[in-house]
View 1 (cartoon, one colour):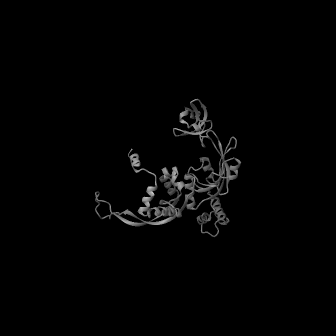
View 2 (cartoon, one colour):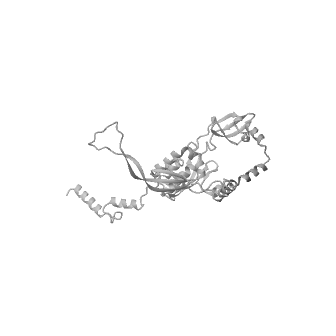
View 3 (cartoon, one colour):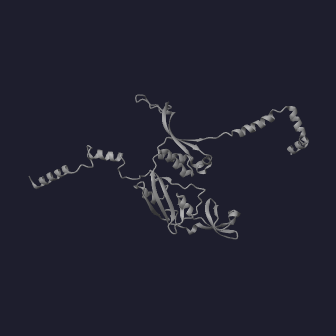
Length: 338
């Protein structure tokens, strides 16, 4: 036996003697990998498109001023109004632009329970400060109640802050209040949200600042479908295509609209885009919005009784009532003509 053949034989024997701890009980390594993946033993971590519940606090890097937070205690310490908003962890879709790009990158591959702080540059956050965005405007474009330094104003569709007021002119800063500020995004990954109804509610909350009641059902509906012509039939290009009514199953997201939702401008002008985004993310067929209007109950009944009392009065009673009213009919007619 040559030296080369002897080395090959030794390598084959070493492979045969190798421990089989990782694949013991399985026919091959591929089967072991499949079982590990099914049991959640893979370490791929959070992926693009996952719904993740985050606790976070956003601060300015320069002086640590709290800009946004999901923690009520942190908000109270920062003198943020805790009565107007609910401070609780929020659900975001990784890779969907719901957080800063650098935060998205930090979340990819991470695990539930991971935490950290991401440095977000001013350019990525709210842009660099632009001196050209400080402009002089006529004071007539500003309401009298808002003609003071620091007032938030809207002029020609642009949001700004009054810097100075001199005579009939005002200097207004149209930069974002956080323009030029580097930020720090401190986060903790609490869970990956798998429930599709919770996913839908969280997406709507991001758009509308409220989470309406939602539920998903599979409905059987009838729809028209074009009948494919037989191959042996001669096709007539001018002939109308034949259709048939068939029953199909559609996975439907139902939304119980609230009065606040129906009056929300974002919803009023972008409901089609919002619904389409939700359907694409959750692989749904359609969205149905329901609005429930409650009856007035006893109040309406009371009004009805009052009206019924007047309507049931005898003619002579009505004549007496009219006579009791101090109104000159001729004068009234003249005034109406005028």
